[in-house]
Structure formats: structure tokens, C-alpha cells
Image (cartoon, rainbow, N blue to C red; front, side, top):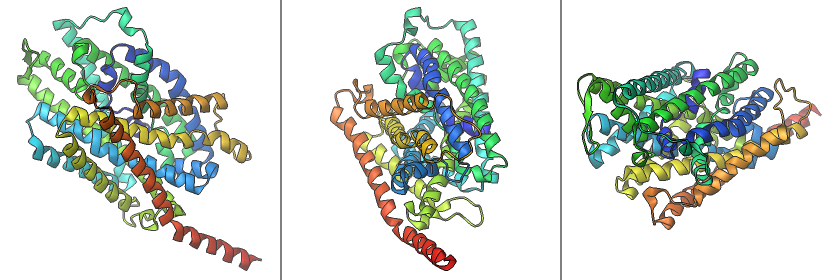
Length: 472
């Protein structure tokens, strides 16, 4: 479970985005670890141990706010995954392949992106007993890749020197806060995912808290080292959200064989080229397992919601062979494929624009769902005070206000940023449409799913009425 959480927390697609905002990103990472990461861990630990029921966040939200609110909320949470797989994760994988292996062209990008998406679908469709090895492999890939990168930065620094960083670069600013909060908080979420399958754990009330503690500490270290490494190697003016980590890794690996030309072009040779290929494969595995780990939880929660009458019953059935929500998995794969093809067409293959819009949309979709999930803790304390709570979050009101307030702020600044991302410079309308239209579609799907769940709800009412009548 600790490795599973490492896969969900340590997203290799966002390291470059943090580094692109300079050294103050490290300072804000520490601040948000205190005012968001820690309270968020307290909140999800209380909910996960008090209500260890399959479905996790869907069940918490349903108990607090009712089935319709929980059903629409769950669709937002679920659909953020195919948006992520077909958006930022696929483009990171494709860009990494092109950087370290060979250019693909427009057709090649489509083929490689679709292969990436459906590899993830197959991994999620495997039984949890088998599928759990995917996030374990992903966690090891992260530890080895990020650890090796950090060590190589030290070797590179001894041999070539590093970019100078002044004390003033670390001073936190309002502009840095606005730019960094969405990405940093997105890096810190995922603690609730194990609770979507608590009925398949031996002892969830013990497993969940300790897994959150271990994974949270490890994730903080795994983010900090590589971000500092990028800042020491790549000039701040050259760091991009998409290519920051990729470019830094390629440059650092020249210490094992290769060179950097006067115009900044990096060429890897000998051992550098071999290690570059290995690191590229590790990065692709890392981003794939991020999507798979989130999908294992989000898809299962969506299947629970559909079986409960908050969506079409067809999607609420688990595979009799694998015990996984195969129908939800396949639908997610189809939606991710549509996202990939549509985004590549709309952006004309412009990877940076595609990445920027896709990442913002994924974060805002996920965080809108948290606007109901996080307050569930306080509501359930009042509504169900008799439920045993093996862990009680300290400062419950402050914890709820901090977590809910920060995700609400994030949604606002993503939909209407004060400063447009560089890839959308002068294109406010295009950027806003890239966020608002998909969000409205996703919310509409949530209400459609709830309407399609009416037969299940009617059947359950009939069963309850017959039971009451018979027992009476």
C-alpha cells in the first residue's frame, strides 16, 4: 500500500512545472506540506479508518450529502483519470520517447499515445492480486530514477559546476504562490485512493494510516531532490513545464558520455546514451504507473457508485474472473483515446500547449470533486457521531477549512489565471474554452449517469419495501 501511494503521489509529469517557477518552488513545497499535505493526511486517515467500505470517497460523500451529489462528484473524480492518461501522461511518454530515441511525427504520436493508453487499460483490468505489482514496479522505478538523477547531479556539479542560485530566488512571492499552488497541491493528493478497496485489505484501519505516513514522507523527499537538481543544471529561463525534467536528465547524463554544444544542444554517447535509454524507459514506466495507480482506485469507486444507483448498472459490474471493473476500464480507455486524438488535432501537435491545457484541466476536475469530499469529515462527525473513529483528525475545523479552501482557490486560478501560461500567450478565450467546455461536459455526464441509475434505485426501493412488508 505504501508503494501504491508513492505511485499516486509522486507524479513525474509535474516535476518540470514546479522547477519552471524557480527556487521559490522548493519553499512553497515546504509551506504547503504543512498547511495542506499534513491536514489532508489527517482528514483522509479519519474518513478511511472510520468508514472502511469499498468505494471510499464516494461512500463518504454519499453519507454526508446524499446519493445524487456523491454520484456527480464521483464522475468528476473518475473522469479526471482518462483526461490525465490521454492528456499529460501520454504526451510526457511520447515526448520522452522522441527526446531519447527517435522523432515520431504526427502519425507516430497518435500510435505511440494510443499504445500507452491501452497498456494502462490492460494493467488496470488485471485482478488486484496481480495488478498491485504495477504500482510496486512504478514505485521502484521512481526511487531508482529520481535517486540516480539526484546522484548524477552531484557528479555533474563536481565536473561542470552548476547554475548559481541567489538567496533572493528563494523568497516566496504572490505570483509564485498563484502559479505553484495548483501543481504542488496536485502533487500532494492521492491519500484517499487506498480507501476505494478497503474491503480487500487484511486490516485497513491499521494499514491505511501507516501507509499514508510512510508514503507522505518519502514523496516529499522524492520531489525535493530532483527539483533542486533541475534548478542547478538547467538555466531558469530554459525550463519548461513539459520538458524541464527530461531536458535536465539528458544534460546531466553527459557526465557518463556526451556533450553540450554552444547552442545548448545535448548529445549523448557511449555509456551516457545507454543510461539515457534506461532512464527514458524508467520515466515512461513511471508516468504509466501513475495513471494505472489512480485508475485502480478511481475506476473501482465509479463501479461502486454505478452499482449503488448513481450511474448505469451496466458499469457497476465487476469481472467474475478478475474482480475488477473491466467495463469502466474499457470506457475510460476509449475516452482517453478521444482526448488524445482531439487534443493533438486542436493543438496541431504543439506538445507544450497540449500539456499545459491538459494538466490544468485534470487538476481542476479532480479538485472540484474534493470540494464535497473534504467537508464530509465534519458533516459525518455531526451526522454519525456514534461511529468508531480509530483515528480522529486534530483541529478538525481548521483542517477542513485549509484543505477545502486551497483546492477551491486552485480551481479558480486554473480556470481564470491572472497570467496566462506562456503556451497560450494572448489567447485568453482559447485557454478559457479549453477548461470550461470540458468541465461542463463532465458535470453533464455526472447528471446523465445519475439519471441512468434510476432503475437500480427503483429496484432497491422495491426490495426494501417488500422486506419491510414481509417482516411486518
